[in-house]
Amino acid sequence: MSKIINWGISGAILAFFIVMMPRISLAQLELPRLSPAAVVTQRIGLTDVTITYSRPGVKGRQIWGKLVPYNKVWRTGANEATTISFSTDAEIGGKRVPAGTYALFTIPTPTSWTIILNKEANQWGAFSYKPAEDLLRIQVTPKAAPHEERMRFSFENLTDNSADVVLRWEKLSVAFPVKVDVQKEALSNSRKAMAHLKADDWQTPFSAANYCLNAGINFDEALEWAEKSTSIDKNFLNMSVKAKLLAKLNRKSDAIVAAREAIRLGKTGKRKRDTSELEKLVVQWQK
Image (cartoon, rainbow, N blue to C red; front, side, top):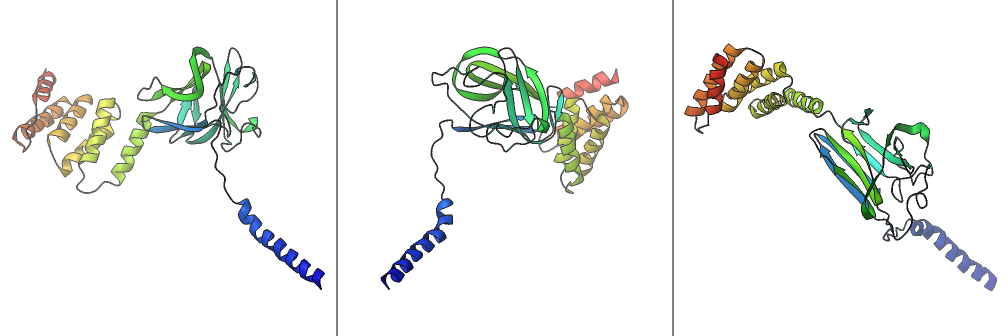
């Protein structure tokens, strides 16, 4: 009888652990990593470029050729593979990169590095790296640099449509260029906005037309947008842009008429405007 009771107690304890085991296994223990996580984002034109990585330290170790072997695929950091994401299409080394997230691998050598974008973004290290999933490979040259204890990514040489992604660690820096077609994205955004334009919104078509004027592109469509803006609320701002666009299209007579109307609105409107620049343009166009 006692054996039966003992077995019953033992069975109950075993059943308890069987029931509780899934809950125990699901417990999350969060501890600090030796290589802390980091994220760096830069907007280039209208494109957000984000690098997610872990930052290993030098800690007195020999890095290149030892901790990070030469001629082998490296996760370009620690822990999970480093990733780079693009909110729109971009270009690296003259090669198109569709919008999305990619693993950023590298193959270091003493004189050159291979930069790799791999379509399998969610990887631990480079242990499951598959060359067949590479989107692109480009070659870059490493440079000597001041000591950097923790590996660090940054964006440098930023312009309206490009930036250099720079990796610094130990006494080395490696950079590769990222370019975007900001005008293409701006025009795409403008057309989408025009397709959903509210009846009383003169500012959106004005802004789209003004962007094209300043960028020196798409004058014909920009004039349509300027005329749409003036049809909603004719004012000094949109009439000035309309006049300048007409001049860009070599329609000088029409440009003068539009400019004189803009000048009139600038001088008689509730908010007085400086019309001197436009007056000088009218004189030039008359010549």
